[in-house]
Image (cartoon, rainbow, N blue to C red; front, side):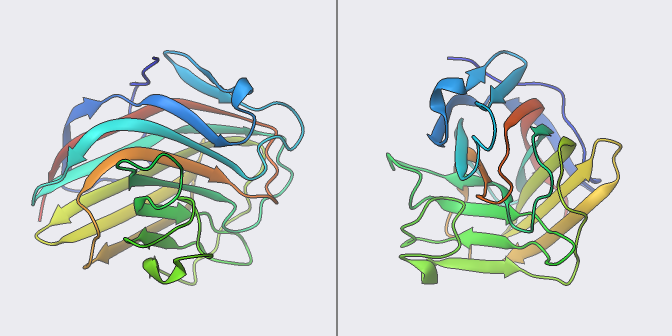
Length: 237
């Protein structure tokens, strides 16, 4: 089983959040999309089987179960290269940190998923609560009431195209709340968008998965994840 544990990529300043420890990502799984084309090495995750092969694709990787105590934090960052994208509308690239638990499908996970923005629409952050019955990237369907939008703004972004992007999500616990901070930037470091909010009703403080989704309209041909890192540490008040 391959592990990915590489150099951190900062999308935005983590402020007073300190990350002294790293954990591996293992057990990469294609829940939807061409599973046979998923190739995992010590330095990268490559996926794609030609034109539009990753439309509606779902991909996840396993973490050792991480339980955040008060004052602790968890960060996921990396570099994503997309191929075959002409123009992607809002909400078509989604990524997050989750608790899969004993689920043997991509449905019903707890945690947080961020959606991309576009020139027409802002992105948002979904908090997935007990009772949701849809795949980890979903915003509707059975159990919709258990999937909450905890971030909304009027900020928009340039559309995603073929190219290289840096992404980051940080979860920081303070008492019974979780601060969720997300960023997506171009390869140069120019931010596409940032999202930040506090969930005062988190469904879990334990996380064991990272997940990625590509909607039907973005129609990605291929992707490469590199320089991916999962870090744990302390969150300053």
